[in-house]
Image (tube, rainbow, N blue to C red; front, side, top):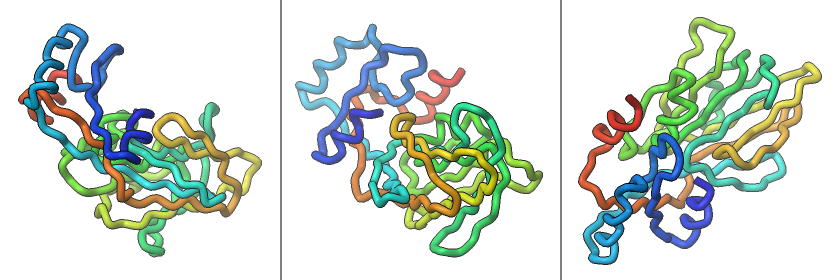
Length: 206
């Protein structure tokens, strides 16, 4: 995940080997390491994956291959925020937070929070509220051209943070704004095995 941020800047493809548990984005398992010879023989394809550009209130930009999470942080407390698309109000939320994800990230925290699984070949952005205090606050899918904006409206003395790809963690103060849109950069994944997204999903998510 973190390698993708640097690799995307230079257009360098990534071949992942799963050394952990699910390893959803990893192409090879440890017992398949011999298949890496196919890469050196040119027997592979490159699969581009959409990324997000996240602009914090201090104008610093952060890349996300999976997602941006806005929440209270380590302690689960309800926060209040509004989501806009192209400056139009989508809705105001009272929730534990919200996940803005790419199709790649749709099979991570977003899926666990009840969001849709999205084919990684699609060009779109998902917004999944976390434990919303509303029966009508459901996950939403936006066009890949959407310009999203999240405004922190939590007036109580509750710190609100954004976390990008599980790494960068930044505090967002009252009435501050986070902007999210599709990045011009992509992560390039090396594919060696002739295995579809749906087959990988079935094998990894059983």
